[in-house]
Amino acid sequence: MRELRGIGASPGGAAGPVYRLAPPPALPPAPAGVDPAAEKAVLRAAVATVAADLTRRADAARDTTAAEVLRAQVLMAQDETLVDAADDGIDGGTDAPHAVADALAVHRAAFEAAGGYLAERVSDLDDLRDRLVAACLGLPMPGVPDPGHPFLLAARDLAPADTAGLDPALVLGLVTAEGGPTSHTAILARTLGIPAVVRCAGILDVADGTLASLDGSAGVVTVDVSAETATEVNAARLAEAERRARSHGPGRTADGHRVALLANIGSALDLTGEVEGVGLFRTELLYLDRTEAPTHEEQVRAYQEVFAALPGRKVVVRTLDAGADKPLPFLRLAVEPNPALGIRGLRVARQTPSVLTTQLGAIATAAAATDAEVWVMTPMVATAAEASAFAASCREHGLPTTGVMIEVPAAALRAGTVLREVDFLSIGTNDLSQYTFAADRMCGDLAELLDPWQPALIGLLASCAAAGVAAGKPVGVCGESAADPDFALVLAGLGVSSLSMAPRSIPAVRESLAAHTLDECRRFAAAALAADTPQAARAAVRR
Image (cartoon, rainbow, N blue to C red; front, side, top):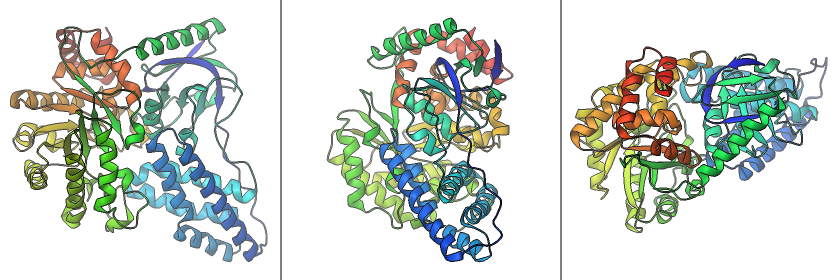
């Protein structure tokens, strides 16, 4: 046996034969001469084929986040700019597969240069290129293997189209050579409850069919395990799943200290099973694929569907999280040199205030028609003045409970001042990590800086939680780190009052909290804060 080490991205253990993702199609040598009309017909047929396939996958996706990414890929495939650029290549004497690959290479370079959210979409463009090239050549679409039995899926990285239709009964675990703990692959693995390890060097050298096990918490893949070991790992996984399936009730420590366990959702379709409430209702889904903003009435219907499903329970609505780094056509924002640091989140209201006021009005109307306890928060707040202005706008619309997301280090450092203006804080650890460490979330080479166990990040979390305790106001965490059963103990020990995560992650976190007292959690938090590295912090808590 030998060990490969990466970054744990989704907790849990699994074992089985490893099978690698099918490689992308290889471009044949460019032909000496082409018929432009015929090649343009091939191009348009390929666009139609790929768009139809991605739409089918989006409709069948198990997760709304995956579905929205796939529909965004459909828009990319059908984009007139892309088709026109490929047509220009054909007119220049190349064939359809080379023309579309060249056109997407230009788009790819622009996305990488833009950074932020657009840089995160580079893998989507690569997947789109592979699919369009395959369609032009009349080859099968690249994708997930189907060995006919459960297996561990290995890949350089996974595209949304690959992950959207994954069946957890067949794909027991995911291992990628690239990516990071906040990548699309990692987030979807946690949503589906599939153990995952990312940034695992050497995984692509493992031959198909090799028996291996993985530990998604420790970030370890063990190759060439015995059949007996694999059986033991999977038996333990099934026993744990069954035990957690019987776990119900609110989150609390062994001595009864309450820590609310809430769900992250994008629509009512994500409400699987019984939940205490919703800690993050992402409203972006309603705005995607739109050339005009959704109307007040459209928004009311979408919000009311979620609120009505949770009578008497808390629903924290995040206002539109989009902007220069997550462009939406109807916003018509200017291109920026550094979109991740530009007009995004609440800052969009500076240029198009009607988007925010219409949304707040729709939320208020939907809330008034249901019995849900509706809270509202906004992203990308940097100062107490911004928090105060947002709270005032909410009150004007009849929304009494307002908060802000803590993603910008400036707001975290002044959490006490911010809390004078609002009723609660919700910490988005993904973006807070990115901005604290000046590390792009999609830069695999910097993945270790985005580890939530980084002591500097834990220090910021501690200061926010302490500010909440001092003010007597709740401070929650809605980033992906909340889904880690061990890290949840640290957060509880710091004084965080609620944890919000994918619904499938809640049972494991509930069980972890129930096994430890609040004093133990406080000792875990102190040990993590005292560590010098994320590895030392993690090890100290596990000891």
